[in-house]
Length: 268
Picture (cartoon, rainbow, N blue to C red):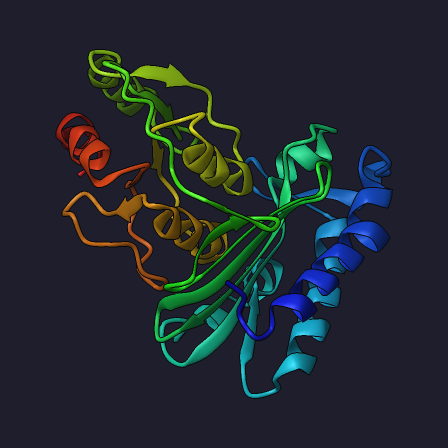
């Protein structure tokens, strides 16, 4: 069930949530929020969270490199070789746009990867105090309960589609095809929430456009260990380091096949 660093990682995440993230939620000054790219926010809490998480993880094993989202934003070369050797991958606040807007849909995420394969992952929802975690070959868990995907079995499966970075024409084409086969649900703009939704049965399918490692390394392992799949349009499983756009996650292999038939023509 547990990776050998599990207790230390969870204690670190909970401490950062309590000391840094939650005290600043709905309590940010105007100068503590900035736009690091178009429609991509960063806050002082992101930076402070990442600094604390980086220091804590580095102390667990100095031989394992630490790669954080905000550090890479400042120096893109830090992500080079992310699929070689062992690395901690940090998303200090996933769903920053929500967090900065006072919307309670965000999370702290950490993954431990080795040669591009996620070995363990943790997703903490600080608002609900919900911990989703998984180890490779050890199952998916929410807090202390093992969980498995719950495909709806509906004639029209529930699908959440990320379209933030698509043109209007691409969005229209995607929706035209998707609406013929699925019941469409809003994407929470937070992988730390979307992956649990796929496991808990809120959604059957999700389409992700951007595939940055800190967004997907923890959640993809959590979903797979629960019985789902995360694959590229060509059917290959997601691995850290591959940053193509247009990845489909589903609560079962069969649902992935159904989704691919409908969605791949608009994203491949």
